[in-house]
Length: 153
Image (cartoon, rainbow, N blue to C red; front, side, top):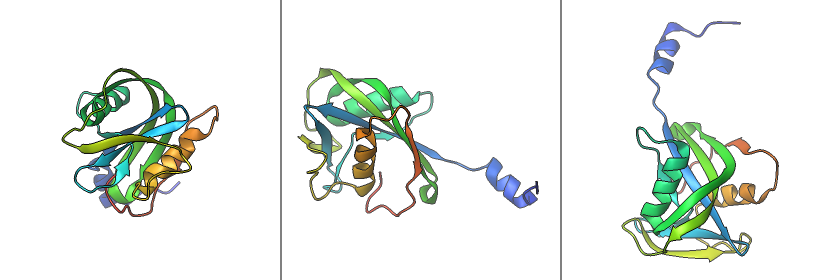
């Protein structure tokens, strides 16, 4: 096996990646989406991991910050590589254990939608993650989301 060039080794040693965690919450066959205050796009609750957090803690914190709901993690639904943005995104399936939906600094509204009737301004990558979460497979989805986003997420 060929060794990478020294410059490539140095670049890999200093590579920085962002880690995101988004949450799928089902209720009566519908999925919770939040309308982003900054763009008007609908998306799954979630965001970036902070230092010292686990993937599960990130999902729970971000969901509470964006929706007011407290959730518990049921399982991992998918892991998505976004190499064009140096990101890795985890999607978790969760259930509500407390709290109450309300407007937040990040979201103007929240609503449950049928997976086959998502609102027109749903982030495409999030629609893909919802479809993947619907699959009742025994393992999580592992895939790349290489297409440019219309918005971060």
